[in-house]
Length: 144
Image (cartoon, rainbow, N blue to C red; front, side, top):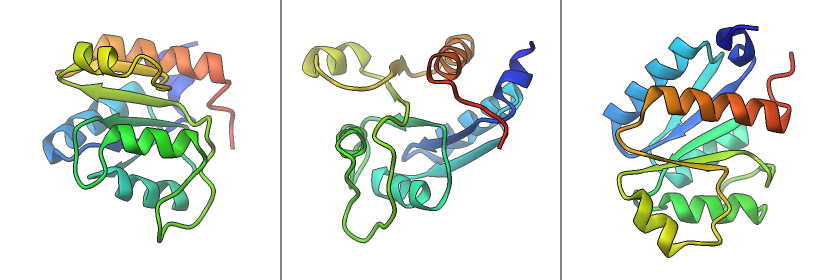
């Protein structure tokens, strides 16, 4: 089965405070065949998107304001949402963290509960490999 076929039923939320990074990731994900790509400029906005749309995978930057990626991840895993956001976010939602400071983040957070962490600039081949692994491991992408 082709990668595009595997990813055609997947929806992804990209959370990054850089419009350029969001646009780049959106284009890459669409080229992979991802059905739907949502975007948000910070963790709080990400929760707002998650409360309104079914999302299979989140790709989240670490260093953002006012809610950075690590705070976002902790709240997702705890099944919490920030004040003003309604809806239930599944705590097992796959989260891929992206940052330019990967080794420091891993060293500072040895017990972090992300599904994957990628360096910026993002290598498209590695991103595709991670997405395909998550789809397979988590049973994502079933026709809706």
